[in-house]
Image (cartoon, rainbow, N blue to C red; front, side, top):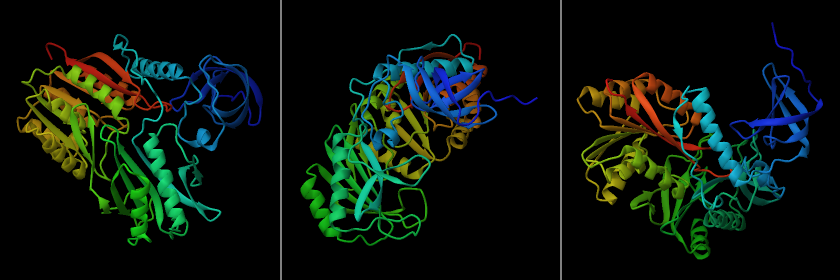
Length: 459
């Protein structure tokens, strides 16, 4: 028997918000029927307009708040606040941390059925704004001038913005300066519909510890109009710039970077440090966008690994070697695996840069390479995983269970898939000792976690 939906589209109803969704919308229930309403906060009483209904849930728009949450903060109304990716900016930072910590606790219980795991208070930032060290913004045209900013949700309409509350000031300045220079030089923007025009994106990267700036212009064409003047003016107006790069992406695609990259001026890479470990960052390198909290995250991973200097460690999903090199400071040997060959080359280069000779990196899928290592007799005392949002591949989880490393350190960017995978590892003979949430991306709904698992005796 199908369920009767208790509300209709265009109804105005009074609600009390009970929770937040994973993307930050308020959740109200009408006779058990969930209604998701952006900008609503738990505990608030409000009037909403129903804008869409389905069999299992509906969507609403906030019309009026009768009683506000103590965590609500007023923000100036602007296009950026509406569409700039800061889903939690209307919540005080204390409230954001509470929401994220609760989210982790709830999914561990609901999905992982993990009732007795120690979940520590979330580690937040002292200053939760202007933390991102990288921006890549789409470019368009309006009224004869270049605009650059971000896409409105579910559209390809570019919203022009001069500043982002989550980008470092050096990044905001670099994007704005390059946009203005390109506009003055009349370098035409790329038009997605016609696949004509030149300038697709502007990227800026900044080494917070070194003060080194990289500017990347991404074009449809191999020819970059007014190239020499562009470089001359960027160098004159951005004193911290150490690298200016031209990337060519001639394809009809939503992928930002193309395959061909040329250095127009300066170095191929800039450098930055996380703790005492130095990293070379190219235009194409993956590098954590919040290095301050990355160090907090990796310090916790190192603590959970509890290395004495005698252990062999495997780092699945190693990327450019960020966690691997942290572990290599305390391990006898670290083996890293990553599916992206260019990232593995970066990892090798970063190991060399830091004089670390106790690392070995292989390109391939973790769920293929690690079982192969295991069959060849290369086991691990500690295994570290830092998978993408979809979590660990089932084949990798089964290999961990067969390999039986004494400890598993699970770094996660998605609490739901973390809970699922912890349940599988627990059923395979492991005990989840503790979980540490870390706020890597303030003002957004994302939350990272580090979990420590130990092999139960007798397994």
